[in-house]
Image (cartoon, rainbow, N blue to C red):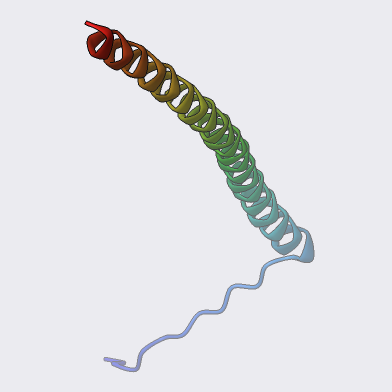
Length: 88
């Protein structure tokens, strides 16, 4: 009885190898396109958030100005009331 292992070789034709590589390339290309799309979506989302941050900063500045104006107005009212109290 022959107990030696047998080795078999399979040779693939060039067209089979080329097809396999083309399939792999197409798969990788699809993955790359998917990743690029996700990256683009993330960049757009970041741009939107940056714009929202800028809008919020502008609104905060507006509110600060309004607070200062309100504070001055209240000071004027208090001064007027103090003047009226002194007259009484």
